Image 1 (cartoon, helix red, strand yellow):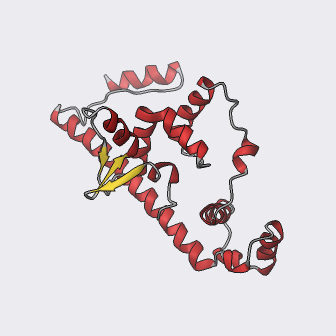
Image 2 (cartoon, rainbow, N blue to C red):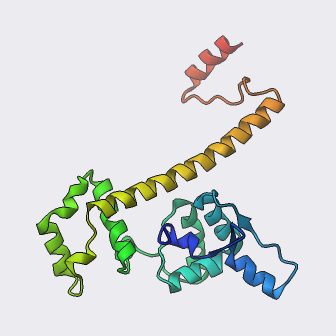
Length: 209
């Protein structure tokens, strides 16, 4: 879905079944020797967002601001805060973050967040009173613009699938780490132990010896 992780997908272009960073492409147009970073189809948005944070933070955040795209991923918040500080901008307050620009995609995601965060039944979206509140708050909204439970359910599954992709990516990193420890023959050896008071540490070391 194109609205999934808009802060990432907006800035990548698919070529030859790989996702190309558009900031890298722009740099290459100016300096042909520039290496363009690409990602495979199964790469999680976490890795792609990390590239944007580390290599193109300023133009990326500036573009997101201009396009009114929210950057909400925890791993990007420090980069955003650093950018705001460099630009002399005040940090975005919680109340401002809560007021997102309206779009069909943002509306659907807000409904999903409400249902999941409050452990609501998906069927709550069919409640006439709730739909009436939505219509009251936005004059140009029609009932046909409000998603029904099937659309909400499908969106929840989309978000769940993306989470599983990110989790799989993190597990691949952990498997690589285990492979390294196997090669070094230290997988089953104790590396570090932390206890929260001195007597526990003393007792543990006595038994460990």
